[in-house]
Image 1 (cartoon, rainbow, N blue to C red):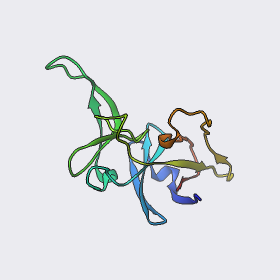
Image 2: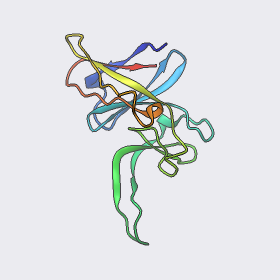
Image 3: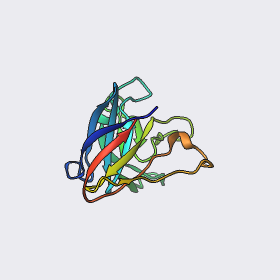
Image 4: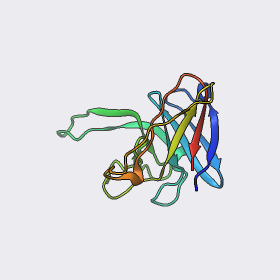
Length: 146
């Protein structure tokens, strides 16, 4: 059974920033990626490092030798121990996205009027185990469901 855990007020988590919380014994990183909120388990699957404490960055797209095409700026978290990279929005590994992922959590933003704003994923989602719930708001507080 999941429970809502208060993260912070929306204005306390500007784009490009993160906040790490304890949600009932789980360490979870909540990120603002270009105005949308995503939550990841703060554990790297490689050797259990505190993943969400790593550098928020982008990555290079495949290309010719000597060619660099920087993409996904601000959308990648790099493990502080061994530099394994994961997409913040999906939890998928950059180098092996079909086999390696980090747990994700539902994020809700409650507006000043206490209206719950939430996006839903249908039951026919191809991989509901890693689906995230991006939400944006100008006011209110951010909650993670874990």
